[in-house]
Amino acid sequence: MNITTPLKEYTMSPSLFFLLTPLVLLFIIKRFSKSYKNLPPGPRPLPIIGNLHQVGKNPHVATAVLAQKHGPLISLHLGCKLLIVASSPEVAVEILKTQDRFLSSRFVPDALRIKELPYTIIWSPDCNENWRLLRTICRNEMFSVKALESQSSLREKKLTEMLDFFSSRKGQVVNIQEALFATAFNTLSNIFFGQDFLDLKDESGTASVLKEKLFMILKNGVSPNLSDFFPVLKWLDLQGLRKQNVNHLKEVFDSWEGITNERRSAAGSEKEQCFLDRLIECGFSNDRINIFAMELFIAGTDTTTSTIEWAMAELLKNEKAMLQLQEELKHNIKSEISNLPYLNACIKETLRLHPPAPLLLPHRSIQVCEVMNYTIPCGAEIFVNVWAIGRDPKLWEDPLLFKPERFLGSNLDFKGQDFEYIPFGAGRRMCPGLPSAITSVQSILASLILRFEWVLPGDQDPLKLDMTEKFGVTLQKEIPLQLIFKPLNNHI
Image (tube, rainbow, N blue to C red; front, side, top):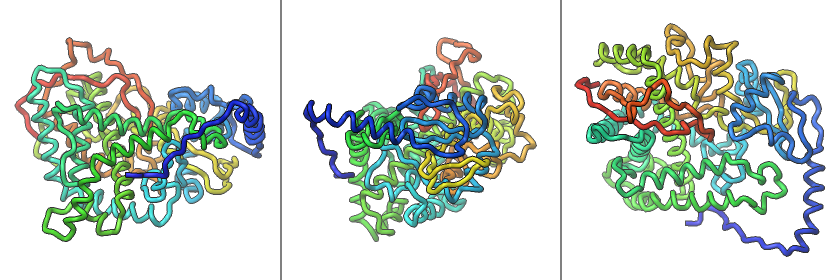
């Protein structure tokens, strides 16, 4: 299937290359030297590259360090691109609430630019009618209280399959990330397409391949790209990231397009309905369905998977918190888990220390406006560093420690109203799948605690567990968590 206009192969003679190079460099220098008045403060940029050398592979950490020196609102020049980074609740309010109308456009990396972007929900460049339609459909059909209740038996079934899988691996080392990903993906694929895509046992390697394709799409999207820093070079796609993503997307789409065609042919039958049928009824083309499904799978699998993995790692390192959570679950085994205070405090604390998207997703200004008395030019890229806000010692006592107790008796919530704690964002671009994600994290984490004792391979000391982060669109453990599960007699 052709998902975008085919990329042409460009060839250039050496003489033409040397003729054009000075012109390109002149354009870059002229564009780079464009002056803006009253920009937020920031480190002095170098010619041509600007501050690229100061961002590094962990931009959430690098910009947090720069904010300590230059203030909670800073500007960085990345080649020709102007980047604005907010690192305090006060600035976050300005960007995500006060000026949300002008700053809620999306900056789309060149590697993710395809013709279907106007019909997406996450990477849609603007909050247009198509975007509003998708938000409404998602909210009503997938993430409302009524929708979540209708999905409860399906979620329970997928959870039971995962627990049975862990039980069958008694005494064996299990890669938590792989099992959680397959479970989250199958839950979404049943809601969306009405069937499983992955095998938890993964004997064929399908889960790993599909996960790798989705991961590469994200990785290419956030990788440093000359096409983003110097738009004049965009047509060359010098690093091949856009071309690679076109190929990855086609392979992912091919894995489910047959199902879409089958459901289209069976429209109006008595076959059990799924979300795909609703999109077909609304007149969505296959291309629009494909890109929409891809966005939901990426957003709904990686974030859930990484949050649960981080929570498990933190509980392993903090025996006191683990014991307190075990006691709460044992004594409230028939209670609604969403109402258990210490379970929810552990999840909130995990999201504070390890927000799924540490910089949220990039915003873009659609017109000149002011934030904290500084000028934000039209077209500037904007990040909100929720990782830095969540670790700010001015806001949190012992910010680097895992202390769920800080949320007990607190009204702080992650629904976008408390700007010192916004792991899912706020405003127009707040994560629409928040209710579904939290429901999954609560049920999976509680079940794993009640059903199993967790043991690190080789009797490793949990206190020495490596907690190094790997930056991407989602913040993952660099070294995936591996555990041995010993079944217990408790059941949720």
